[in-house]
Length: 184
Image (cartoon, rainbow, N blue to C red; front, side):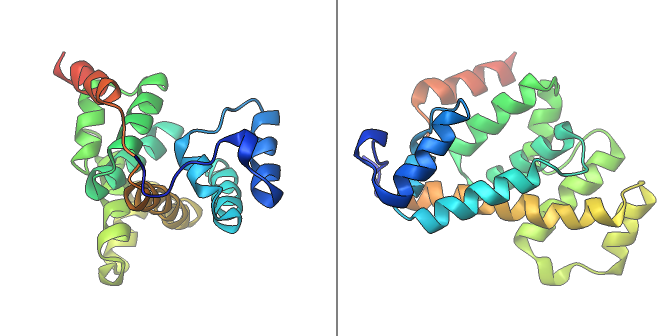
């Protein structure tokens, strides 16, 4: 049982109901994290707005998912690791790269640099210096993309921390699914 219970859509009211209905109208079935966030409609609105904004990032989606995996591995959010492993696979990210992303790196130097930078944004942002940003620029990243890493990390910190606080976890079957594919 979750510490913050997901609200059944048919029992939601007020702003929570409006937000959940908006998601359903877009063709989605709100999962347990979103329905638990509905306990705090202001939080849910912020999550939805930041999610929408970060979908417009100027980074390749395969890099974004690697960043997401690195953040959630660091946070130990199994629910998020399952979701982002599935998303990375749908985008064609090889299993070896999914595993490397979870370690905060990649076999591609440019991808490794931005994934490691994202982990630094999460773990020690005060320690980021000119050399860190210059290293990303040397790999061809523009300031816009570098800045967007902060938004991507913030979104993943929000979802991962919320799931951990709410005690929302992946099912054993979902965990077995991502582990089995990685072992192949």
